[in-house]
Image (spheres, rainbow, N blue to C red):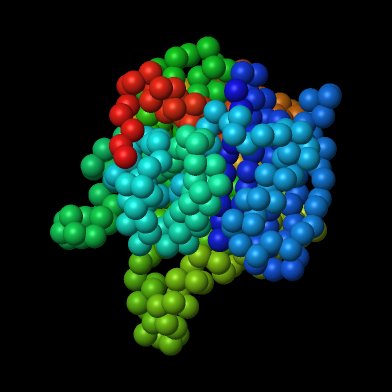
Length: 410
Ligand code: AMP
């Protein structure tokens, strides 16, 4: 049973194909630079030894429809999907589901127009996600397609945690509230953590830290999200590659008045010129780590700030949860940077969090427990797999429909 995952950006399409009987990813890839002469696909194919070979292919691709066709030809050539109509379903990653979707949904015209209505909440992401859905629906109309939202996992956050202390009518009239993102990643690693600890997901209390170029922390109580650091947009919360995370909102007005900046300039600065890049000029944690080792003061400051902000969220979510079974590191930085994990957990023994530095040093991109024997809280490193999480939701949604549990609307 094969399932394809599509994650469409404004000039890129990420894709993956899974065999859901074995839960193995057969191949995946990223088509980027759509609309230029330099479009290229970086494709990864599973080899006979269970490892992945990378193949780079170039072809001018002028739009997403051509891009989808190119991907189908690549996956056919690589023999991972010879006939796309054999697909059990396609799962589309959609960034914002607003309050409309607290779970995955089979895509029909009503769903696409609802996702379109939500564009003001995610102007950078939802338009590209819709483009991907429309192209795939047109090309493969007989394959069931499911929208899986980044926000849905956070639908369980209670009102006292999702409201901002702003005039209530802004929520009623303009849907201003915390939504949260990276839901598929937080959900996936929480389930893996429960399995690693031999607990049911319903009994797991955890703080999940998704640390990639975008970063967010989530408080998980009994397997459900009860708070998360990203807000109405992915700008709030932790320090990220180029996003500021939390700042005093009054700084914006100050910059308009005193620095002569426009609203657009402030918005772009907060999203793409801030975070790690704003402090040290670089948003790649690997390179920042290397610079800090060579005594680059600003690189060191950026790392210190990154870990300090994380510590504050861990402390806050500890108070929210009362009891914490595990702290989970994931995302490119969480999975690979022993330095960031170690600095984040340093000094938290008062909360029962004690790291074993040798175990931490040995955990690179694989599932591992890295806490000391005396630590009350488990410290876990878990590589995320958002695509597999989306594939699971896709299968569940289509299966429920086939079993008659859900009615497909025309
Ligand atoms: P992601 O968005 O999840 O792909 O994560 C990207 C981030 O992970 C970038 O800041 C990378 O520099 C960082 N990263 C990847 N590998 C390492 C590593 N070995 N050490 C430190 N940071 C890493």
